[in-house]
Amino acid sequence: MPANQIDALLSLRSDGRLLVGRDRIALLEAVIEHGSMTKAAKVAGFSYKAAWDAVQAINNLLPRPAFVTRTGGKRGGGAEVTEEGRKLIAAFHRLEEKLARISGAIAAEGLDNFDDLLLWGLAVKISVRNAFRCTVVRIDEDPVDATVTLRVSAANDICAIITHGAAEDLRLTPGRSVVALVKSSFVILAPPEEAISVQGRNKLLGQATRRVDGANNSEIKLDIGDGKILTAVVSKESAEDLRIAPGDRLAAFFNASHVILAAD
Image 1 (cartoon, rainbow, N blue to C red):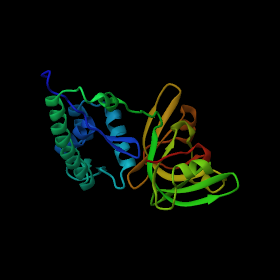
Image 2 (cartoon, rainbow, N blue to C red; image 1 turned 180 degrees about the vertical axis):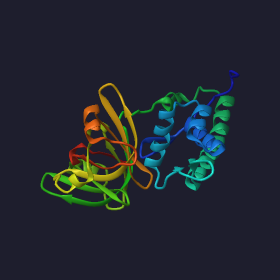
Image 3 (tube, rainbow, N blue to C red; image 1 turned 60 degrees about the vertical axis):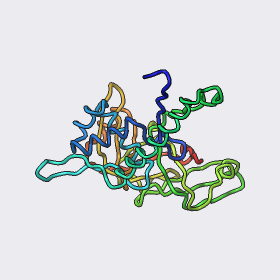
Image 4 (cartoon, rainbow, N blue to C red; image 1 turned 135 degrees about the horizontal axis):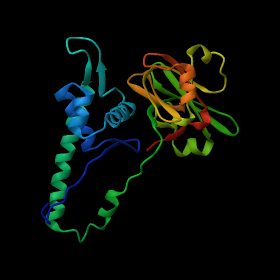
């Protein structure tokens, strides 16, 4: 790159979480071109697992899915970018063009008056696998805590227990959009019929879409509706006992105190 040029990298975020950058946009565009996640991942330079994680992260943070899979038909199934996803791609490219013009102007004028540019490269990466865009449905307060009910999909709500101070700092009111974070290791899986007997925990029902076994643990992906995917990491022994396979209906449990809320 010439010395007088700046390569400005754009990333779109939703409630503080990375939504898309150039690499994820390239992946979605490859899906449009090839209609296959396997081919798209190869073209965009992703591993197959990383590609799935990327599109699921996008879906979890959008009101409507940007990416869906289809089954059957002459092509035997495949992957598809929705209208919401195509709008996201178009919006990203429009913003990237504007950012390129701004960075070009900065390069032409010099950097003497742009000390804050060093801050542009700072970002926070969160290790939590489950990050869901949710809508606050209700807030119930007692003398100590606030119990926040959140709509994560049409079929599932979750609850978070936080302090009064946190609820005030986040300015929580019904209808407010927040991100709910849940560590995958906090999620417990069980047959759906056990959801009735479990008390005092979040209970989400969904369908297993993927299982990956490691030496000691298994990673399970659970479709909880509206394009949202919940990730659970359980012991391999537990996955074997439950005989978890793609297509199985499962119940997922986690404590309300294990849900972390984030808002802008």
